[in-house]
Image (tube, rainbow, N blue to C red; front, side):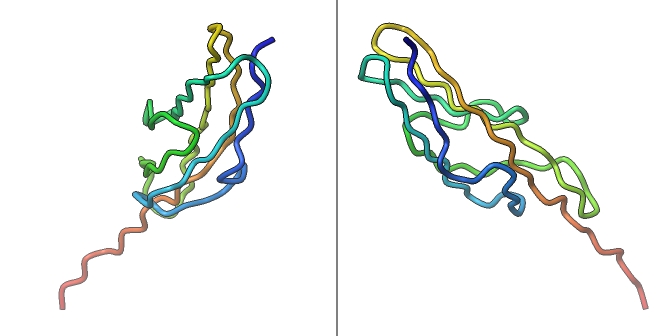
Length: 102
């Protein structure tokens, strides 16, 4: 049986400011240890490895819109069996104020 994977932090649906370091925490049960953990974002690619990773996420939107990232934690056990867990997190779009000349 592949490992059962959970993401405990951040909570699914959390919102962050652009370029803010975010702590991602996960765990695996079952399968055969040791485990290999790899974190990735649907927009930024690989974020790091290990059960805990700290990484910022990018935004491509302006004007206060939310930019969705699907975060995946993939865990492979000693037998090569893989389990995954996913969450969605959102990054606030940067609000740019107009330049005013007086």
